[in-house]
Image 1 (cartoon, rainbow, N blue to C red):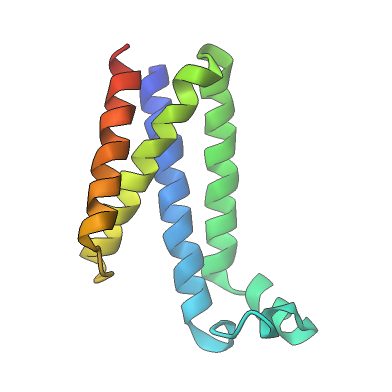
Image 2: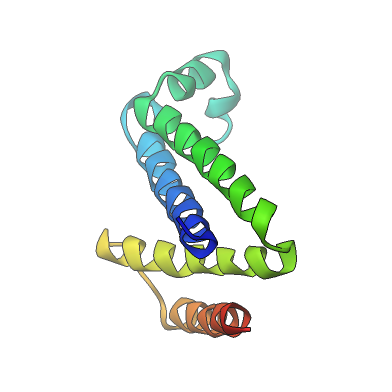
Length: 121
């Protein structure tokens, strides 16, 4: 697998991890206020949630893949590609019914242009 594909794979893994974490926080007793998650019961509910654990595992695997990218590319070339994660997150969020405002959309377009400029250079 080429380095660009590894970078995209790592970014996609991180994006999906984010949605798993969100889903985990929205079901059952995990849907608590921030003050409740710091209680022992709240902590237990979070760490035993399958979606949250899957999200953390996916982040971990994505980080290992990212290490492969960093072993081949300069950080200044690799890290700007993380902007692809912003684009993908907004697209998937929109598909899942999240509200995407005009300003948020334009921000993602600007990030996309920046990622493209870095990627082609």
